Length: 319
Image (cartoon, rainbow, N blue to C red):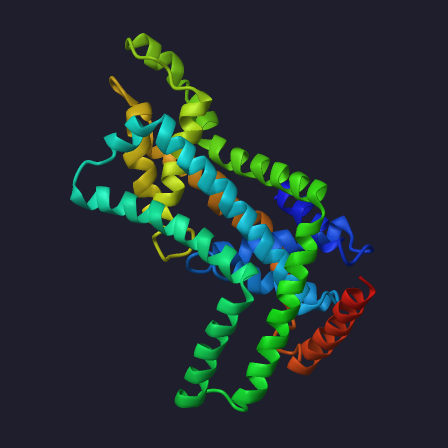
């Protein structure tokens, strides 16, 4: 959460110098809570964007910042996954216990790569984005579930224009990008390291040695946990419930079930409490900052967007 707040602060301050660290923490915690309680972590970014809009951060710029942050996270996570597949393929191969587990693992890895590629394309290709908008507009016109589809189309196109301009501006400062990648890498490493410290807390290395086995290293656990994440992300439930526990059990049972010692169930419980339920408990009070979402009128958002669009045009002209 701390690193997430730092990255949010770095991005937003590229345009809003007065944006405070305390505000970045609120945005990060709101994202954690609503991401955890919605299927496939889909509720986090919309609520973060809403909170940013209340702070008068434009929709296009806010979307660009959150999308860039997500893309960097996906790139780092995918890089760890690819490295793990190369250097610790044996652990992945051991999980191929049947056709279903094999298919589940392969599809999970492919989906992670596809999602990263899709967001990169949409973020920087205005032509592809325009085609997507045309498809959405066609659906709105023919299904007729939206009033004034032409107005909506113009609004969406304007938002994406600001979105792409903001993306390009965010990519200009190379030192800032390096700092962001380092922060996100630390964040991902911290998440991937949790099972190893559970492994140590249960005294499993000593038990492994006593049973003539080689204790696992931190690097082993980082690689294996990356397998757990890309496998369980396929489950479209809040927190990947069920899939996360199953994936953890498949990959980590050899390390928590040694001889007559069976610690896999308490390990799963402690892992989920630390990485999922604990984050909900900590971030729940900050869901208060999403209050007033329904009362926040659309014309207020459009007013912010208009102001941002004028500012972006002025900055382009100055350059």
